[in-house]
Length: 393
Ligand SMILES: Cc1ncc(COP(=O)(O)O)c(C=O)c1O
Image (cartoon, rainbow, N blue to C red; front, top):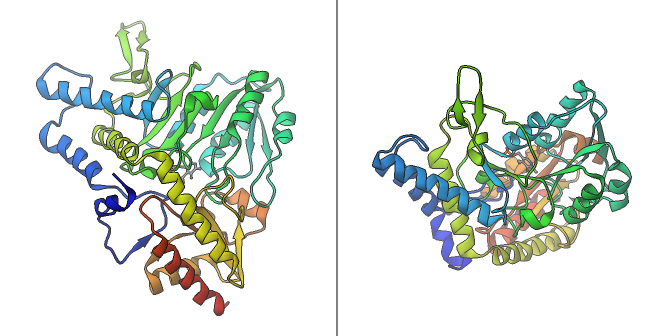
């Protein structure tokens, strides 16, 4: 399937130009159909019982895990379904065996979901070191070398910034972590949807991402674990091998971490989303987005009063483009883009208040985030609308 052919699968009204995929993506028809098929034709609980519907549902639920772990090169680890990236990260924060004096290294570009769980651990005597980037969101690798000391237990970094679009050098960071014996968590919420990510080869111990940002349904996410021992956040149905009145033995595999009835239709939808992305090819998707991003960055650079926040070229960045126009409040710009051109973008702090403070952007930014279903024509429309607003700035 090629990218142009897939546009018909996204049934958002044609007059709307959706550029908020970093918040959540649109969902193609085959994903909706797969979820509906489960609810209509073989709805049953999974991993329980022997009747025919539960056997079909269990098989499809397991298939979804296989599809997702294959998609991220994670077959050799454990692929746990969660409700989103936030839950995946919190599962690691709650599941590791922390000791006072342990160090966590993270950065000032993180989404609150990859910051607050670590900040909370300060209450347990854990030291949290936060590295600050330059204006474009880039870190010197030496900063990681210095901060990842022998007492560092975990390093938590977003693969791609959801504000600046910057891609971080996760393989190099993984090498430093390995040398110091620190676990490495990659928040891949903005990378897995946009380019090919191989969890195993990345060298991380935990990879966290959201299904709803990659054509899947809301309420789906993933925690991939290489081999680290973490205790499950929730115990209950589905997580045990055996139980007596004295205690219990947990199962191995993803089931240990997925207590209770899971989001079955969501998981099946996510599996279908992965199939869909694979049928388009991640390299083709990434090239398409690079082309659109280049067009957008070049156009923005030519408009007076517009400031791009993040790298000005497409090297090591994705199509998450933050900008401001003079002193106009970002919410007003987003409102005007919608009212005048039906262009839907995000505005504000993007759940990254510390980064906004670091960059001196008290009202945040406007963020256009592109995906496989956006077109060059839509980028041109966005540029025209921005130019018009910039004239009044
Ligand atoms: C980099 C990053 N991390 C974490 C999250 C949190 O994702 P979710 O809301 O799906 O848990 C987001 C969402 O925008 C994100 O962009």
